[in-house]
Length: 172
Image 1: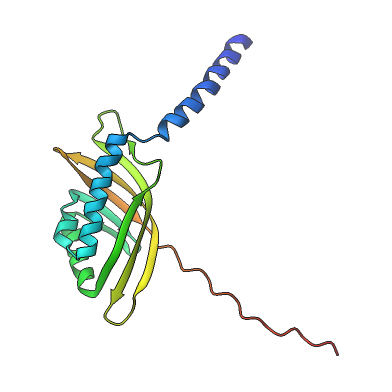
Image 2: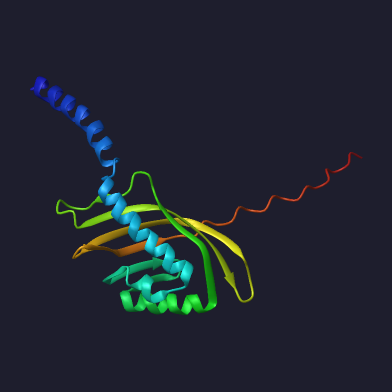
């Protein structure tokens, strides 16, 4: 019985590093396809094109923003149409993490990925401001096209201001 337990432990020990290495190596064709989707996303943001941006989402998509979730392609398009009237994005880029994407399930029709984003924004009464953050997404294959099914993102807070130097109390 001890021998079986020891052999099982060894088998798991040798299998885990192989599994970890395998899951951290993205499929190059999948990476290329999802990078192309991200590039279209960048172009839509930089052009202020809400319709083109929304077309990159599935009909049932959910985008989780810092203001709460937005449900469905139509609502996502309206959100960005309103936003693009108030704010202009430039230099918007999305970059997937080196270990992304990862297939979800065995059929190859869904994948998750994560990475970072950055942009310069300019409003009527502010900016330009540099923003950046991180994102994660589930992307789904519809027909022969990849689309975003779920996206969540954040904005990295600006670094805290350095405290002002204070005079040390004098010795009296």
